[in-house]
Image (cartoon, rainbow, N blue to C red):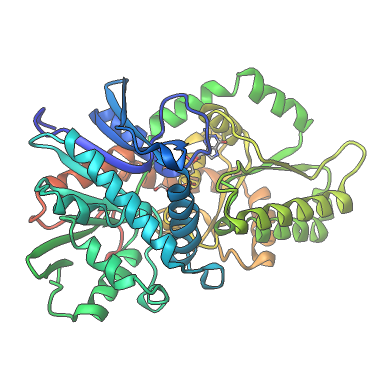
Length: 476
Ligand code: GDG
């Protein structure tokens, strides 16, 4: 990138180096991209301020060639916007959970107010030549607010989560306002072509077909918006090296010794109802019921760090998972065997990669997921000479690329149980052949190509966005 084109990433939460907090795929992806390009990362610091304290200007720190500009947000505003509209309304709606979705005018106003606050505090930090890349559902209206401040810089928006079909989206009273807000950007990017088609379908339903060109450019009012598919990837060689190194670390060795020679099944997910954990626990119980020959020969380690605990749906899923894992252990455990180890803990990323390298099977079974980086990390972390098997939900963005995984319907607990048996009994030659193809899919589209392709589109918003990662873009 030319020095004059500074990259400015904006996301709700900024992953300050070494700050504690729930991990998330967005932070992992943006941090990797920023390490390569430098620039400024602007967003919420993770801290709230008292309601009557007013808003202080962003705190600026520099690390590893990246400038971090972080804001504190007043408590009530944050609660209503983040736990309320973003995670109580948009998150369930965009993941097709219509029964867990609610709408509240006050929360929507708080969401708009946080976006206005972000715009107000960001504008003084902008320079001529900046490329501005806004991330995810918390910040849909930010582009519109920046335009109102007179910002003319190229503005891109990337949605990390699924974009729902219009028939689901229209449950939201403000859906037309949010759709209009998305048209303030020059480039709007999605994880999969299905998401992009849903977005174009919503544009068509609201404003007719004529404003959409055959290459997915929208021309409406005085706007010209390029849409594209930019599947997020991982840093394959860094993960592979970190995973191999981490295996000899004390913590990973301790975990390995605790297995007492048993084979390791693993899951790593933020504790979230979209990740299909309840169905997965149920599938594992079925597997143990149906396959007594595997008793005391496998251990299922599920790591599920907590986050969003202020949203009631998260407290409910947590209770349900504790009950379910307790029930399985109660039914099948032996004096020397705990069938499920279920941990609500956060581990350093490298340690996780070490755990994943030792796993014979990785279970990634969300009921809906924009991409799912854990699926890709598992493949990158494996030893190619003796790789494990990925069981992957067909409702993840990752399933579009990782077709050599054992693909399952996340609601089909019997199907997942069968896939577990198949994975554990799969011959080495088949595991190697599948892994080789999976690795090739990762390499075609890694974290570097994700951010380079997006920035290229942002620099030249009037050029056609090339198709990403060999996906079949004609399939809706
Ligand atoms: C959103 C979208 C999309 C997990 N536990 C720990 C930890 N992790 C890391 C994983 C992985 C990341 O967090 C989770 O990423 P995912 O993609 O699986 O899921 P979301 O958080 O829901 O991410 C998703 C993503 O954005 C990127 O666009 O793929 O669809 O929902 O990297 O390894 N990291 C550390 N400790 C943990 O305990 N350090």
